[in-house]
Image 1 (cartoon, rainbow, N blue to C red):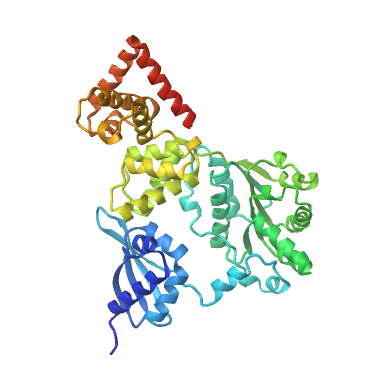
Image 2: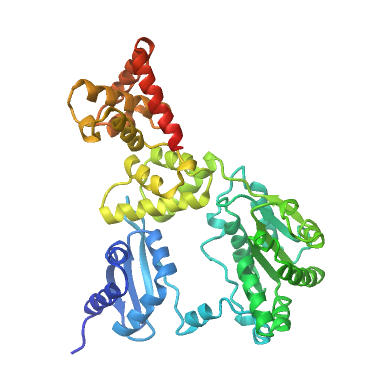
Length: 469
């Protein structure tokens, strides 16, 4: 007897559950809702709660889904997602999933660290650009700190044949968006000029390929392959400092591409002048085009980046939480995205709203202590430890003198050391209102003026916060 599509879907979930962790299943697969399966087109339509879930499934579980559906629905299954893009108005969008070609993904992974061969160079249409399609200009938010590099990058992407700004050398600290920008340039070029041979590669992988080519006696094939590239994008070239063989090899590749009008885009965590251990002839070539600094995003750009991601993922995060995250991520786009992704996962797993307390918990784990402000929870823990009381007792309605003192000092330091509004501090310290917080701060300040022993205690607590930082 032929089983129904819904039964096949249930069988799919059973197989998936056997091949992932329980937390992965609960977070990413349990929220999926089966909608329909059209036999004539072999199209399986499922609903997911946000664009974030759709993107995560496509990026991390595409091969697993393809294998499972071949077993439960048969060959040639096309997966489509109905993505909830507007929870408030029940707005959805149907997106077709990418196909995982049989055998190709495994082959690509096993060849990733191998040097290209002459066969690779002879089949230009088969070149995988190694670009991340999700890192594009649509979600690279413009701000004061990245306006020039973004504008030049867009110009290069639209006119890659131009000799202007060649090479483009982008530098900046970790997490400022360099990899996103150079990927966006490559993605845009492939959209406008699909015939162009574009290749994104990390400096470390290039070095591994070079070393393998020498060991396997394929060095000439390695050089021949890279000389066929129209747009070469290399990330993290500071990795080559002190690597003489890799430097000399890239010098010859650079010279060939440059003389033939090919486009070269380089990214580093420092400008050419600070690349110690690089030969002068290579540094001169790095500097002959455009050197563009990508600064850490300022607070407003961080807020804009967060709001863009929140809209894209269909999340609901209060404005005060967005501002808090922006201030806590220390200008790192990577930290911003990590915090939002973690908030999404926590919210789904624990079925809880995204609020300030959850944001503080996530940031405490996601951002290095040196880079983030103190949280209200950390302040309360330190104060309670000093006065030898528990946080649950401080959060209670008790009016015992020692608890009132710890409560008022906690509110005082929360107001002084964080940028959280008084109304929010009150809610986090036993559910009080903002007037209680203001009164507590005034009481602490007044007592410090007349009680020197109390003043010494407050200073001792403040010093412990400094030691933690």
